[in-house]
Image (tube, rainbow over all chains, first blue to last red; front, side, top):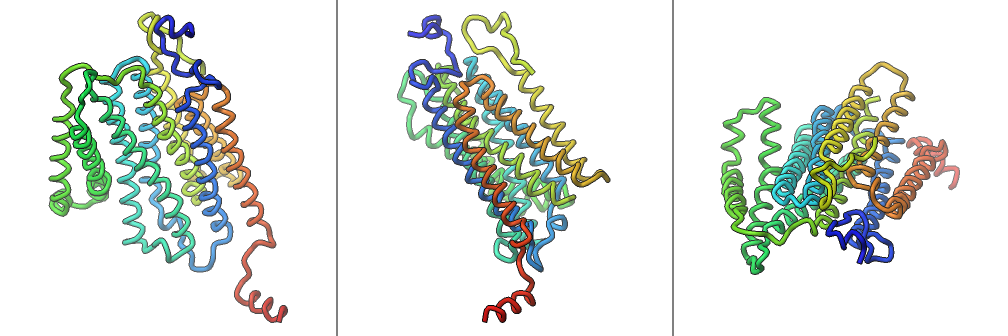
Length: 278
Length: 121
C-alpha cells in the first residue's frame, strides 16, 4: 500500500498501482487527445493551404466574419475552461455540490459558444450566401469549425452524463429510468439553448424584436422550460450519494477533453479569423 | 507562476485548493485574447502582428495545457505523449504550408493552363 493510501490521502496526479504511475483513464485520454491533435492539424492545414492561393470568385472572409461575435465566443469558451478547472478542483476536495454547479456552468457556457456558432452559420448561409459547396473557403471553413463545434457538442453531452452521475445514491438502486429521464431533460435543455435560445438572443442584441423572437419559437422554448423544471426536480437529493473524491479522475478526464476543444479554438481563432484581418 | 501552497484548512486530507490560481490564469487568458483582437486593428508592421499573434496563441495554449489540464503536476510522460501528437500535427502543417506556398505550387491561370495543355499535346 502506498503511503498516500495509508494516510487516506488521494493522490490525484499519480497512481502507484499502474506500471506507468499514471491513472489508466488519464493515459487513455492523453493518447486520444494526441491523435486528435493530428486530426485538427490536418483540417487547419487544409483550410490554410486553400487560403494561400484562393481561386477566383472565392468568398472574402473579412466581408463575412463578425469578429466581435467570434471574440465573445472565444472569451466564453475560455471562461468555460475556467469553470471546468474549478469543477475538477471541487471534486478533488470532495465538494460534490460545487462540482455540480461548475459542471452546469461549463455546460451552459458551452451552449452559448454553440449557439454563437449556430447563429454564425445561419447568418453566413442566409445573409452572406456562403454555403458548404459554393466556394472552397466555405467548404474548408465549415468543415473545420463544424468539426470543432461537434467536439464541443460531444463535450456538453459528456458533461451532462457526468452531472447526472453525481446524483447516484450511495445505497444503490438509483433507478436507471430516473437517470435516463434526468439525462434526457438535461439534453433537451442544452439543445433548446444552443439551437434556439442563444441564437435568438444574439438576434435580439443585433436589433430583432424580443416579442417576435419569443413567439417565433414558442414551442421549443416551452419544451425547454418544462425540461428545465424536470432537471431541477430530479436534482433534489434525498440522501448520501455514491459520487465523491474517488471519482475525481472521471471528472478530470472529461475536463481534459473540454480543455482540448478550448486549445483547438485558440488556434482556430488566430489562424482562421484574426489573420484574415491583416 | 508557482502552484499555490497548502492552507491549514487543506492540510491532511484533500488536494489543496487552486481556486484563486485558476481565476488568475483565466484572467491572464482573457487579457491576452483582448490584446490579440486589438493587435489586428493597429497600424503596425504585418510581420510584427503575425509574430505577436502566434506567440500570444502559443502562450495561451501552454497556459491551458500546463495549468488547466494539470500537465504541470502530472508525470512527464503525459506531456511527452501529448507533444508527440502536437509535433506530428505541427510538422504536417509546416510541411504542407511550405509545399503549397512554393512558387511552383501556385495554380495556373486558365490561359496558362490552355498553353500548357497545347505544349504537352
